[in-house]
Each structure stands twice: as C-alpha cells, then as structure tokens.
Image 1 (cartoon, rainbow, N blue to C red):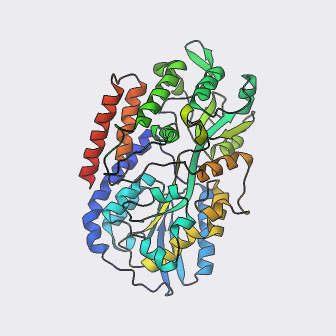
Image 2 (cartoon, helix red, strand yellow):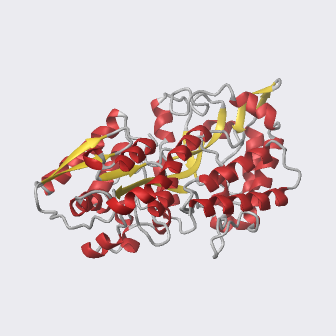
Image 3 (cartoon, helix red, strand yellow):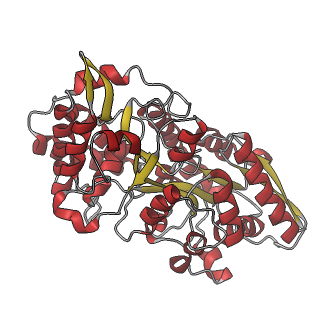
Length: 450
C-alpha cells in the first residue's frame, strides 16, 4: 500500500489544506511551549507518545515490530503508539498541549513541512543531528532533504519514500505492437493513442487517463518531468516565468485532445473504481498505462490481474531525453513536537526510525515502499523485484524532483493545480497570462502565511 506518502486526490488535498491552515495558530501557542529545551536525560526511564497515520493491519504490525526492536535497544524508553492519526488530529493535539499531545509524530503530508517548521510546531532537528554526529547529506538523498526542511530548519526527517513512474500492461503493449515503454513525451502520446480502443462515445480500453483528476496523475508529478523551478532566488513564484510549466500544460492538453477530449475522458473516468481496491481501472484492463507509485504492481497482482505487468520511469520532454529515468519523489516525514519535555528521548526514537539501516529496510520490505536512506537503498537485505527496482532507480536519479516546502504548506500547489484543471478543460484563453496571474496569487498566499 502507498502509505509512505499517502498520495492524495484533490479532495484529500483540500482536506489536508484545512488542517494546514490550523498550523498558523500554532505559531503563538508554540512560542511559549516550544521554549522548552532538550534537557531531559535520554537514559532515564520514560514513555514517549508516538502518533502515526498507518492503519492497515500489515502496516501497523510493521510499525510495532520496529518499535519493539527500538525498545530492546533502549530498555529505558517505552513507546505508546497511536495509529490512524491525520494531520488535523495532530494539529488539534499540538494546539491543546499537555499530557495528551504526542512527543513524536509521523505525517504522510510532505506539504505540511513548511507550515510545521514555520509555525514552530516541530523542533529543529539540526542540533540533534550535530550532537549525534549524523551527517544528513551523507545519510539521505538530496531530494528527500529538500522536502523535509524549510529555510534551514530541519524540523522533520524522511521516513520511507514514494517514487512515481509508469506502470503498464505488457500484454496490451504486445497486442498493439509496442515493444518497450515510451521514453519521451512524443512516444508516450503516440503509444497512448495506439493503446486506445474506442467504443462508441466511450472506450473499451484507454491508453492512459491523462486528466489531472486521474488518481496519481497530478500537475505536480507531471511537471517534475520538465524539471521546473518552482520559486526564484528571491522566494517569489516562478510559475509564470519558468517555461517548463507552460510546456507541461501544453503537452498534457494536447494528449487530452488526442485521446478524445476532456468531456469524453471524464465521462469514462466517472465509472472507475476506488484507487485502493481491486476495482482500479488498471486492474480491470480499462487503462493500459498508469501514472503511479511503487505499490501498484503488488496491488495489481493481489487483485488477480490476468496480464503481465511492467514498470518504467515516466517519459520526459523530447528535448530532455538524456534525463530519462527521473521522476517525482515524496514520502512520510517524522518529527518531534516542540512542546515535548522529552525531546532527547524522542530524538533517540526519531534517529532509530529514520537512520538505522535495519529499521528502514525492514519497514520498507514490510509495506512495499521506497527506503529513505542511501544505505537502505543499497542494502542486500532489501527485497527487490524487477518492477520495484524501477522505483528505486527513480529515487536514486540525480534529477528526480519534488515540490519544495513553503510557509503556506501545500496552498501554492493547490493554486497551480486548480489552474491546471481549468487549462485541460479549455477554459484558459491565454496560458502565459494565466500562469502569471497564478504566480501572483501564490505570492500573495505565501506572504499571508509568513
């Protein structure tokens, strides 16, 4: 299951945004509580409250096994674990403070990091890293460090990751005479057309669902293939200046049109099953290619698909063919409440969960996510199938990207996403003017958050 980054649809993104807005209230609340220094004795007997968002039995079991290993190595520290916690519940508890608030938190929402850091809700981990002699640049991939800190405040660390690529139906490819996955966008468009089988005003099979409402096919993940610059050196939005955004939106709109147009595609999409069930359209053979994460091949097998599954990096723009192999990265983050009076003990847990190779590998093996340290990525104990290796390679690629942390959390992404929705529907008469207006809105939102 995709529990590392807990990928989000537009609806869940908006729900997360409402939680993020509450973080602004924490800035005042944490000023007093966060003044608590890490003066506790990590060797003293204590109990930590650890909140996380995993809920499936296998995932909960994997967490419990890692915690048990930690407690054996640190017999003085007991960990009280609470699962299935959303950012909204976490924020409420942090605002309330007191004994009911968690000491250690794991969040699926990487977009929260900028707000967590900016508000002071989470403690800066840089002093703990230095005190422990942990060189974060040598432990974690650079892209993961990018989305776990804000303005030098390393208020979270990576805990497993997600890499996004292409999952495809090899049987359908063979039937269409396609011998290998597409590497460039023009090849992707051509293959998507070859794989599409119209049926009246609908489809028997669609090469790929290109609209931005199609599960993991978000504007941010596609934009990563163009290697965009989201923000200029002065902190202002570069959405209206970097041509990568206009190029991506133009290419995506062209694909939408060539596969039948927005309205026809959306009518077909309305009949799709739940993303996390056996009724997923890829499982049912309704789409031959799927923008997805490392979890999809295993989920498809569990659904009992009758076709052979292939994986590959997402295609790149034709003029960036040499960069094929890159993709979008995200993941789970882990941090310490600034209000905790047990921060040194809490750091022992965070350090173990995020930097111990055995802990990271065993967790990745258990829930089929991408490891979040360089050592774990290369560990011989990591269970690697050919399909999974694709996503490990994407995670290692030097030009794989992510969306940077900002004080407004994920608001800037939702602003861009909403503009992308309008673009693919054909409601934007002047793309460049629209992008410039979008950039101005992003700048306004961030200024308010700061």
